[in-house]
Every structure is written in C-alpha cells, then in structure tokens.
Length: 168
Image (cartoon, rainbow, N blue to C red; front, side, top):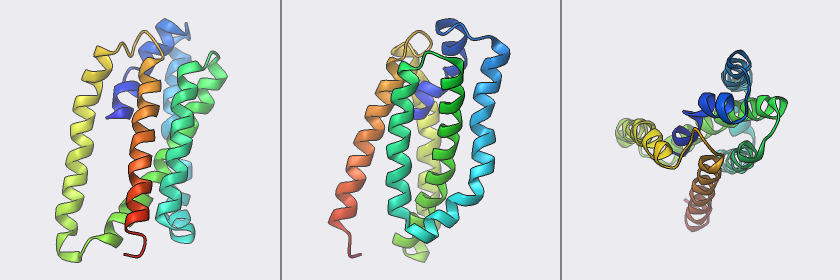
C-alpha cells in the first residue's frame, strides 16, 4: 500500500512538480525495474547467506531512506539513483520475505499463507493509489514521507516479532 500510494504517481510528480521531461521520467521509472532485474539474482542468495531477517530489515531500512529521499530530491540524477535503489530494495526484500514465510509456515499451510500474502499485496495495490490521491501524490513529496513512515512502522513491528519469536 505504501509503495502504491506514492510510486503510482511518480511520473506525474516528476513531470509536473519537478519539471522533468516525460522521456527522462520514463527512463527514471524504468530504471527501477532494470535495477531489480540485475539485482534479483542476488536477493535469494543473500537471504540464504545472511538470513532472511537481516536482508528484510536491511532492505526496509534502505527503503525508508529511499522514500524520504524521494520526498526531498531535487535533481533528475538523484531521482534516477533513487529509482534504482527502489528496485534493488524490492529484489532483496521479496525473496527474503518469501523464504521467511516458507521457513515459519508448516508445509500444509504454505499455499494458504502465500495466497493470503498475494491477496494482501493486491489489496494494497488497490487501496494505495486511492490514499495517494487523497494526500496529493501528484503535487508534493508528502506521500513519500508517509510511505517512509508506514515502512518504519512495518519494520518496527517486524523487529518486535523477530525478538518475540527469535528461537522459533
């Protein structure tokens, strides 16, 4: 939801608020997927090597910084770098979160858990842009700060859960 409420409006935000050309905006937005493609090969192996929890928390920390930086970025180059970092965070977070879910879920419940995860992601993709529209995603950097706040709350809740269930 947090990503959808801000990134969904990134093209409009960059072209209208930051006066970046549509062509350059397309490159900036495409750069996220390009970076994700190249770093996706490492996401799973990093999770295996260092542990899902560390990769999840590291990528979330980076995501918080990325979203705060989106809100204050002033240059095209900064937006390009942030877009790449956003893609990297996604390609590290996704395999680590799936691995963690697989590790903590009994085999009989995995299909249900992964379907619920998929449903939650889709619900967030529907609700996120509606919230973003209400808080002015196309006109200001506020939605990026809100997204960073949501990721911070999410990360804190994960830290609490990881500590509470560290031996299981």
